[in-house]
Amino acid sequence: MQFKLFVVAVTDAGEALNELNGFLRSHRVLEESHELIAGKNGSAWHFCVKYLEVIKSTGYRQTKRTIPKIDYKEVLNDKTFAIFSKLREYRKEIAREDAIPAFAVFTDKELAEIAKLPDINESGMKTINGIGEKRTDRYGKKLVEMLQKQSKPPEVNKD
Image: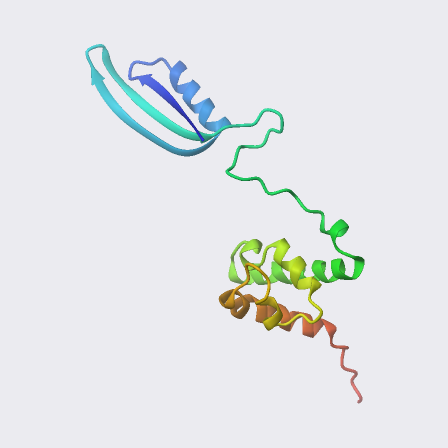
């Protein structure tokens, strides 16, 4: 996290203001504070901007910790990856129904661990690090129901 100070005189012709606006557009601003200060030489706006620094080599913004991307197709075997992919589809449906981000239902890491379970059920989900009682009750039940519906063969009409 970095800080940058700007002073924009009330009589500024636009140069200092353009510099401030350009900086704000090109950085991830965390916080901004400002104050109008009147002095002997005139009045000016003083801005303090707290922002994340751009790392030049990668172009990514600095964060407290970086989580490496995992290619689950390489990490999981074919059967487990197929289950993982189906779980991701169901997670997306659940997230859309509840109007929340998909990762709030279960993260990819958690879904991969669910896919590895010999029998996908609520009690098995609770054994996975990061998945507790509340998320199992709220989302795990739906996920299990969706999997069970998909695994049942279609009923044949005997008429």
